[in-house]
Amino acid sequence: MSRNILILASGTGSLAEAIIVATQSGEISGNVIGVLTDQPDAQVVAKCAVLEIPIITHPMSSDRKSWDSELFLIAQSLNPSLVVSAGFMRILAPEFISTFKVINSHPALLPKFPGAHAVRDALAAKASVTGATIHWVDSGIDTGKVIAQQEVQVLADDTEAVLHERIKIVERGLIVATISDLLSSMENSDE
Ligand code: GRF
Image (cartoon, rainbow, N blue to C red):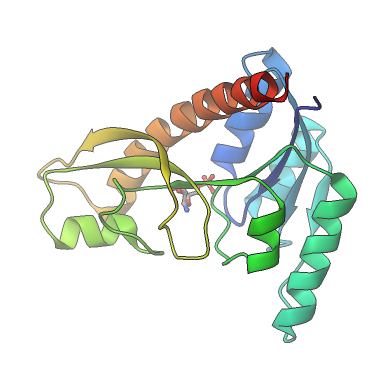
């Protein structure tokens, strides 16, 4: 079985970088065939250049249906074994998630605090513990089956940015370990 990973990312790309470095060091036995971003100016683009990983830019268009169809065709041409949404701030179309195996990393302990402001929402709710979740992507917003979770304590003087950085440290370890396990179990189930 091939172990080709396609990463989707919209931001600084620290999760994408952790995954790529883990494939290059052998911690994940698989390879990143490319990183697709909807944000051509995002820091993840420069990170991919340094890491010598192909970057595919697919900026959002006013025609969302065409954008979804093109995203599907790009992914289909790459034929990934696993698609990893690592800070990709777009909802994926039903055809995409029913065709590809897609996982997502989320900065909260789902089902608590789904959505784009999970860290802010945890602070607003005065949660004493939050964390990171890796889950399968389904048609809802952060509703897919949970694969792995890890807690992070909320500290009294946490700001959104400080807490998010602490959660991202955990996310990077969890996503690498989860991808490694998933690729192995997918291969075993093929045998
Ligand atoms: C992560 O916290 C991810 O869960 C969220 O966006 C962040 C991405 O961070 N959706 P980075 O761009 O990989 O540094």
